[in-house]
Image (cartoon, rainbow, N blue to C red; front, side, top):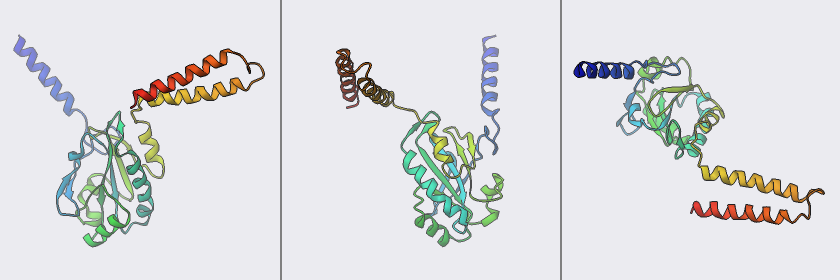
Length: 220
């Protein structure tokens, strides 16, 4: 009886793991990609599991892509070392639809794309582009630490706005922010005709200063 129960449990657990669909819609597990980088080493998308990853389809010949690249570079610089509720750190897996290695490498260097860059140099016949149903570029998919797609086609400041929602904030920093607001309210209180000169204000100011010292010492 115990063995039967155990087998049923294992079967149910296994089915629950594989029940999530591999696909390109939000909520799907993003299909894996494995292509050569500029050095010729094959790098898989799945090797980046654990981090929040932007799968970015682009090409050096694509004007809109080149205009969008600075936004991605900015997001990468700002969020690459941050912790999120959906993964540790942020990175980009750039998939180029270039035709030649020379143009691809020049585009990567010129736009300062310092993350993982891969390509099969097959232009619109690129295998990942077909798998992901990419009909135009730039096109991107944001995935969490488990490879699940959580957003698509984030342009302009939309990428940074989306990432901000998942930042794990330091409670101490939030407390300091609240103290700063409290100090502003204290100044307003002390400057009012109704409360200016009250002896209790000194006690309030002393308490605020004491809390600021304590929280600063905690962060050292």
